[in-house]
Length: 561
Image 1 (cartoon, rainbow, N blue to C red):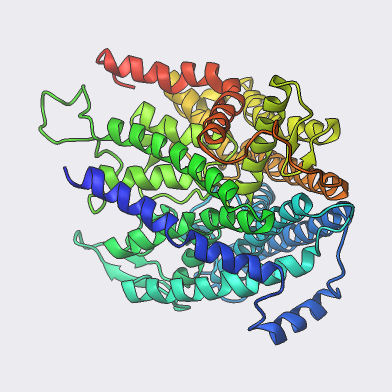
Image 2: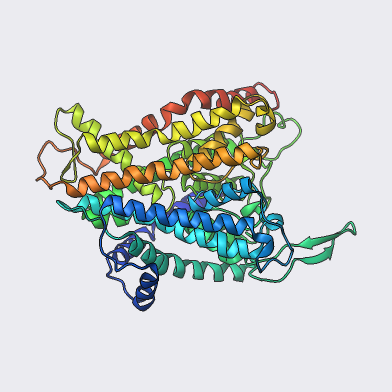
């Protein structure tokens, strides 16, 4: 079918074409060269109680932790006291403390894991003031950390990395708010609700009375895609006809979830004054994305061997919206797991074993294939530093990256960050398998049950937020354990990245030598991809073999799971 080629190619082009222009604009925003909203910026900075004075990495990190901690506390209280707050026409009660903890951690860490169904659990106040606010500031936090790292690479003999509050405000004000406003208006045009009215009663075809859920959906959906958040206004996310009503809304939501992460790679090129290096990293990300997309499409367009004798339908349509089909569902699945977005337009649990495994691998690699806003590029930069360091050792030279020597301190922080995903998935997730009710939590024995567990904790530790259906996400222990995995996955990367930025900023720049490893070109791209796949994925090869690979082999033998 022509869609198998045209749709993926069009998607990649729509993501990459605006990246240089938007990346250049974000560079100007962070460096104070774009000031068209300066009066609002100054007023907001005054409310924050800061004059924009630059901070060292420890002060930057403390400001970040304090802000995120306050955001968590406020959201936790809003969710617990929801029944007493305004804009609650359905009179929904507050959440339990376990679920409120899980949800507050989820949105504060940019994960947006949802152990609840939005339209039956949360009021308009909770959705707007609680969740949507965190969608803006959690995305801005990731972008601020990425820019602090860029400054650390480019500056020398200084401890200053910028001001967290200023970076946060500028990204929210100049980037996210204008883009989200335009996106929300486009979604309203396409039929997405934006209302404060109570749910509307109606009579279904069978005659029973039901409620039609409404609410301020368009504004939250716009930022959930742009900010790589992914938390749906409705329980089934962008598979819901109110959240994603048309073919155009599907493309808008699908493309925007990668737009800013791709552009931030170009922002890196502007900061380091080496656009070739930015293009090389963007090429590596794109190749990894296309590799995963090809595997997913190949698997989802194959007929199920168990159904081949009774149907002529091409592809795996189970769990997919008939409006989108296997092709658009596969593009969304690979994009949302590559981007730490977590939004869905199909049920990932119904994908073929290897098709679903693509999403798992994207998350297990640390969400570096484009990744979340800011988080994707600073996660990939850790692999860039590791690649340069290993190549330097192989040729017997002191490793240097863009004129900065990479010493033992930087590499200790890099190695520490590489332990985040194994601990978050294999250790914390492994505790669930030791519990007496493990089979109830994962909902199914055998390889598919293990796949559900792997996916859930990869999603939590990778700050993604999507999940396989059937996993008992609202279980009290899972609310706590997954919350801990989300915290580890967020701050287990942020602290090392800021420490590395501080260390690099203090270093002096040295002149490039003939033996320095090139950070652009085919060789660099190839070695970077190999490093990501080997270092990022090798730890999870056994569980992938016991989960999705074993399930695939079982299905090939004609057995149902």
